[in-house]
Length: 105
Image 1 (tube, rainbow, N blue to C red):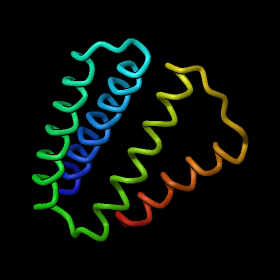
Image 2 (image 1 turned 90 degrees about the vertical axis):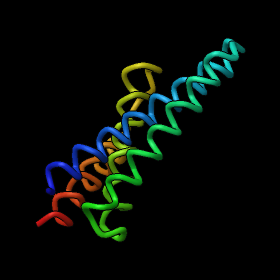
Image 3 (image 1 turned 120 degrees about the vertical axis):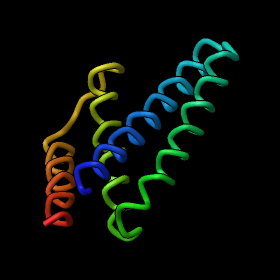
Image 4 (image 1 turned 135 degrees about the vertical axis):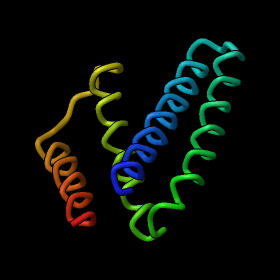
C-alpha cells in the first residue's frame, strides 16, 4: 500500500505543478484556456489527493506531499524556466527527499 500511496502523491504533485505551469503561462499569454486547464488540473489533483488519504495518516501524507511538490517545482523551475540553484537550494532538496525516506522507514 505504501507504493500505491506514494504513486498517488506523485501524481498529485505533478498535476499541481502542471496547474502552476498553466497559471504561469496564462499570466504571460493571457489565454483563458490556460486558466481553465489550470483549474481542471488543480481539481483533479485535489480529488486524487483525497483518494490518497485512505492509505496514509494525514500527518505523514501532508509532509510527503509538500516535499514532493517543492522538489518537482524546483525541477520545473530549473529545466523549463531556466532558474538557477544555489548549493543551499540543492542541499534543501536533498534534505527534503531524505525526510520522505525517514518518514517511510
